[in-house]
Image (cartoon, rainbow, N blue to C red; front, side):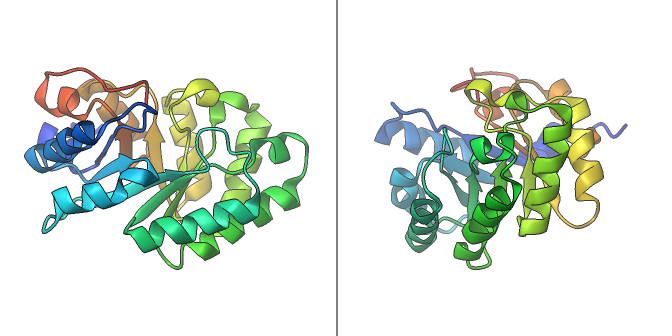
Length: 228
């Protein structure tokens, strides 16, 4: 097991606040954390992309946003439009939720085709699918990941970290890594609160961590901003 240092872990954290009541001042604080600790990226709702860009101008911190979140039930057409919109606004990476109801209804072709359409709309930018493993059976986890892989995503991600999406577990991340192989990457989210958990999840196969507890993890202080 590799024992990652705090500074090494910081480079793998996408510092997150996607709460519905986040304020303009919260976004400024979030981006300041990214600059202070050297986080990989900031994860925000689409309406804050332009503010984050201003705060992070000239830095290497990536602008990331969440799409089709937190329910995933918007139409494919609206998700495609939103993807085009957030890319135009300046998002460099987009974590999106496919229609989980399609998957659980056995509508595998529809599930695959929606993901493929969203990926195509990203026009080469990084896409990460939030698979919401907390709502899936073991067989559904495997099928969802395989379909997302074949649809062209850049990352497989266990969960949004919200609601029924579930927390990152070693077993789930190992499963995603096994399916991903050397074709795509794995991001973990949900319940990653301290440096020990971060190390466990990274060693299981994740290369990125989505968490609101970035400062807490690498600095040993502060509180998580949400359950994400």
